[in-house]
Image (cartoon, rainbow, N blue to C red; front, side, top):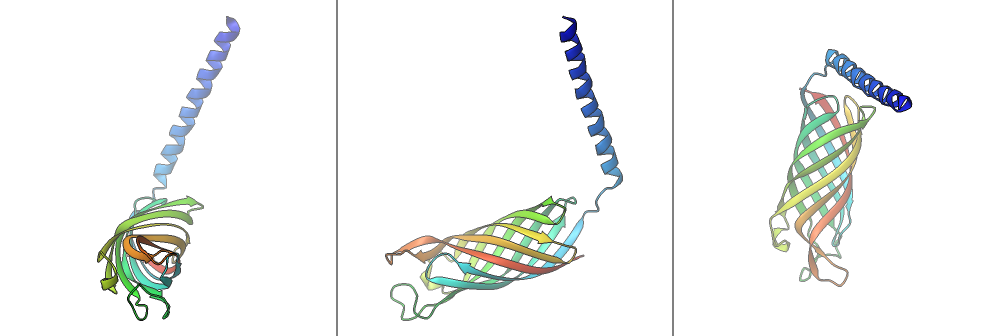
Length: 193
């Protein structure tokens, strides 16, 4: 019985020491509080579509970011993206392929996961077709975009995948289906407001 009592006492002491050190760590973090604020970034995008008839993509964007803390931020992004079709490719009934122009409007959450420079981010929103709208059943699409990236005080480089849920694509057998995806790289310059 005495050994079991000593084990319980040691366990209770260990747990209380962990809570005490946790409280002390939280108090020191408050002293070095991170200033919340706004940032603005201007970026260029290049990528490759994973669905036919589209091939390359190019675009530019503007991203507003509100830093909740040193590790977490909220984002709003808009811009213009063009999905290029090679001249020989296109939808059935077209004599030559037509590019798809898109204006995205998306909100996101960014979390820095390593050294306050490497991050993961998820964005969701809408994509509005501005050209080649005759070949889409919907002129507006749901847009989902996860990304990973590296950011410094001024430079932001990320790798992302963007999926346009309601825009048409060609299957291997030539039939139409919904959902166009692209893999891209974004290089941006950002600054505090």
